[in-house]
Amino acid sequence: MTVPLDKRLNAFRPDLADARLKGQVEADRFVEGRLEAVVEPIAPLRRQPRPDAPLETEALFGETVRVFETDEEGWSYVQLQSDRYVGYMPTTALGPLPGAPTHRVRVPRTLLFPGPDIKLPPLAGLPMGARIVAFGTAADRNARYVVTHPAGAIVEQHLAGLGETEADFVAVAERFLGTPYLWGGKSTLGVDCSGLVQVALAMAGIAAPRDTDLQEQGLGTRLADIEPLARGDLVFWKGHVGIMRDGATLLHANAHHMMTAVEPLADAVARAEAKGSAVTSVRRLKR
Image (cartoon, rainbow, N blue to C red):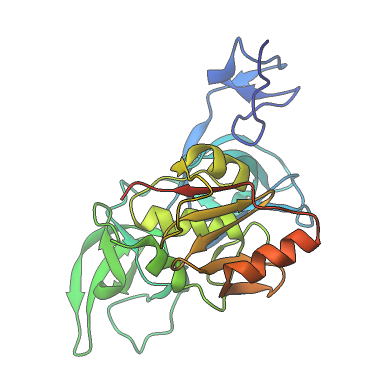
């Protein structure tokens, strides 16, 4: 039996589809799409092309997307290149590729200055994971900067080369403590459970799917019930995921605290079970 393609990860509608899906789906027309870059600090990806549609996920500055269609209402039908997620993004959030990214933001949030001077009014705040193209370095009496494209400057210590990775993804996730819960969010302005896992793992050089069901299917190996839990283990419920901070404490973005919080795993399990939701699996990444 043929398994239907996941619409979250494959761009197809009755009227239009990704040319790479020809022969797998039916559509009135197939298009190759064109690559563009996210030029806003954070760009929403929505289920439908309207501002009040549910937020599916977010794309961060410098990410590459494949654009299949741009309509007259200011929406583009796109697929993120990083995790293949498909949806609608404001066209104003997209622009030409400036070149291959060289660095990414390694701190929870940094400022993009119009030049190498901390006294200048910032142009924008960039989230952790945002990608930039470096065109050189500069310095003033206060700091050293990486000069970016488009014209701007970011303090050097807030950036890491794309090849550099964090040693402990849990420590990355801990930087989000207190961040408001936002369905579909992926930054310290707002994050959800699977977005927290995805961003933290990405900073450690581990690619992860966007949603909890895909993460549960694709990340690590399942632990037997008798195995003791350890830092970095992922605990899954239907529609939720948390990160073990140690053998007994859970770190997760959740709608109970409405923020990224730490609590005893036993408390989270009991609260979920009271609502009829049991742990579905615990998975361990390679160490």
